[in-house]
Length: 336
Image (cartoon, rainbow, N blue to C red; front, side, top):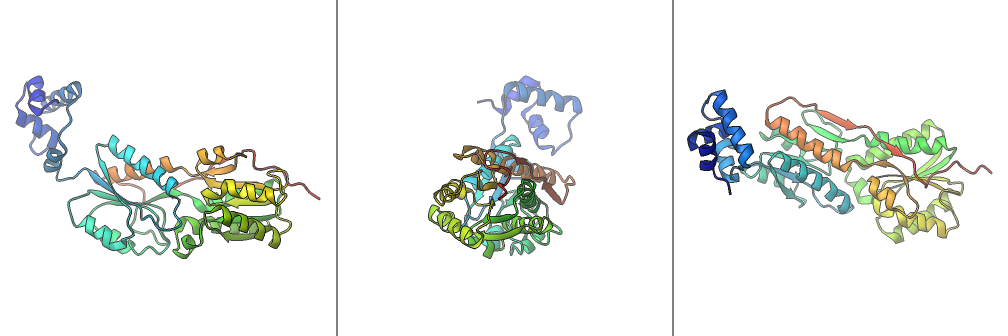
């Protein structure tokens, strides 16, 4: 393992000079600093985490707050977590994962210690009770999600309202006149989870704009629930030919359920979804979908935090535009 003394010897300076070059606590000449940095790169020296923290008054740790509430699809959440961790490591930061439903108390507990330098907060609600505390903390934070009132906060997310609209517009463009949204589990809407509510807003707005008959159906993430909602949809909307799915585990079960009821996908029924691309591609009938850019959102949140930690100005709002990919689950409506 390369030590600070090895760097000092290689650069022809004292160990304390190497320390000053790393911490910036005392001025050194530009020529000396560049020589030390060159030796660090050449030798592959990595400062000890504890030494870095003492030198910079930082822990080099970010908190990722993901309350694992009921109705959350954990595999997708973990995609966000992997992206955050991977990007944080590129910035020489570790990530502390907080998964318990502790609300303000959990945030304050972490913020009142020297455990973390900054926080990324997920599963944002429209009227999120954590907002006043986030606005008052002296540690920077970024929310993956947009509350109803985002003033004084830094937020990044997919434009879920536009995503809902885009799915409906595609179905309308194929001639479908009766559509339905199979949405997240009921408890997600009861909590006022922001992204789910905005998908409903976009779906409804686009359906109304195109004068489509439409309905919204929250649904538990289970095959039995998929079968039940498929039966209900055809009972309530016998002319149904277009479905938008915003519930990742239901993609395959819904296709199976509709086929068991005598509807071919896409011959009789077109399906679009909002989900990760790899999931849409892996279904037995690949699904036309708006991508859920977990990697881009996770890395974007970390990049925003790094700039905030360096006292740089960042945009308050970063909304990623939705992107729809056509696959085998959609086709023009078979007009009677």
